[in-house]
Length: 452
Ligand code: ADP
Image (cartoon, rainbow, N blue to C red; front, side, top):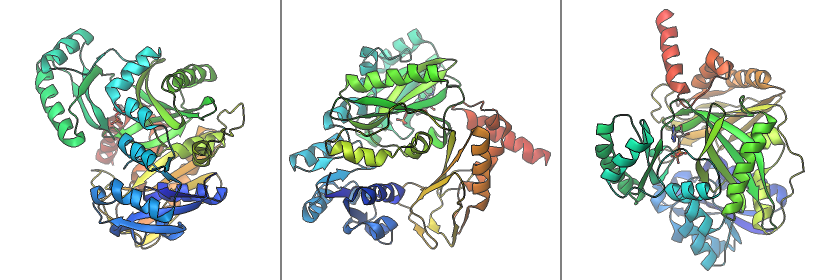
């Protein structure tokens, strides 16, 4: 095992990694921007290094500063968390050149799967189902038109380098495809430095179901079941759960086996997630995330494992230590608590004048927040992940609702009240989910307000 690692991240995930290190007896180095001087990951790490001013480009994305921090402190490896540099193949390569370890898959695998058009091709080669669409990146607007006519509308145009719900465009009208291709490609060039686009058939009401996979350097590759992440706003996840109500042991094995096949095909090592769209019993590969996910605690709770400790073990060359015959026990729901307006989703940075965290049976909270914590405006708005586990979905919902009632944050706006409403929504309760859930939900809320 490593003696000391550096955590190239902030917020709750930096703290989560510190927790895992503490249990394994690994020392930690926190890096932070000047906006995060009073952050808990700085408080609880064994050492800390300031790497720059608040803008991420000058601190959490500043490869030079982070490498210097690792060298000065003698950190043997870097854990990138999620976001920031977690899927930056160049960063993984530079670390390798500097003889610093990387807690994740190889730079080559990150590059292969990070290009979403390429990942689609790899999936096809591995015999994993994909939606009808491009075999190669689209060379021109005319080609987009030709292919879309062939696939049939609606289609979704996607930036090969896109992520975080950005760089996608739904096209329903054949006359709109060429114009959309041009603007989407230009936007992608600016946002991601790469204008490559591909397209696939757009499904109207699919579910988002993803599989956690794990692989070590001793040839072991397995999946740890699914997480359903259909509840999204602007293609970004709000609430996740496991098991999915549409999954049974047989379907789980079928989809899990496809995920494992794809992981093996690219020589994957460490934790990863294969995302699928699920529609009426069929599933289609969407993309792979070559890192730990925000929603990894859902799997940890429902499977009884510690994914972050396992990441460290595997990166240190040890075989993975999961017990055999893992399957989900009970039901787990995660609500993302964001510092934002619960209706408009506009960010709401500022000081938390009150913070009261719920507890009790079946509850887990991953957060970097504390009373008087100032949520800086510079970063992602997520301030906590609230998880509830129950014997079944009904008990998990009851526990989550109870925990949300006891969860108090004043001084800033949060999504706590939104989650309370989602959990009481009859369509949510019936498990009748799709990635368009929030649209229907907002309609129902409006109706309730009008009636009331
Ligand atoms: P990102 O890399 O930005 O997360 P993804 O390709 O994973 O983008 O897609 C994010 C979300 O966009 C999905 O969860 C789903 O809601 C929607 N989406 C993506 N592709 C399709 C599709 N072909 N049909 C319907 N919805 C889609």
